[in-house]
Image (cartoon, rainbow, N blue to C red; front, side):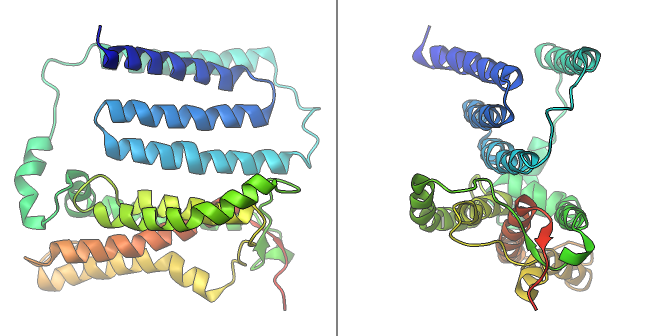
Length: 313
């Protein structure tokens, strides 16, 4: 048995153990910590499967951003009396049975695949060179399935509007009240001062390299959002009021530019979301750069939650 096989077996065992711990621990905070670790371990598993784009997304969204959202939910639940709410065993058994059924279905699909697995990968690779992109994932997202990608970004904005709509009337246009810790630890403050410069460079690099190698707007935007939220959680900076003009401009810049280039495709390339010959790559890189900023702001404000303080006059 090779060292790689031993590592893979140990990784699978650790993923199962951490997943079970996230379910069995008694405190919500411990469950969230286990969930974040679980997401990071899953990203390592995706790397071992040579799916680096999926690994980056899992680490950024599945572990990082979702974990921060759950930490915010735990912090807000401390102000609510949740001890009186007890989940009965029948509901727990039903949830467990449903999860087991889904896991069994996935196991059957993976362990007993069809003899000929349908795939469009050869077609994608054959038609990718005219776009100038070296990353087939970026080619699918911005060339072959560009409309889906555009709608995903619109859905992200709609989700943010849904969160903002939870604000009381007097707080509309005001400041979100994200506060995970009542008194941030000095270590957290130190990390919030140390990591953002490195994270900003890494996020920009993730956006830039996405046209050729694994990366892209979503991964880069998530890293930028994480750095921003780290500063907010550490208490070094407050979340901006949702009524700020610059905030709303950044939120819509990416989708609006994407839509504008898509509409221009009717004039210069005879189709919506089509690119003129020879200009596909620079246009896609411009869209990704704008989307990176919009995604970073949207994810950061999603994690910050709805406004709780009235806007300052």
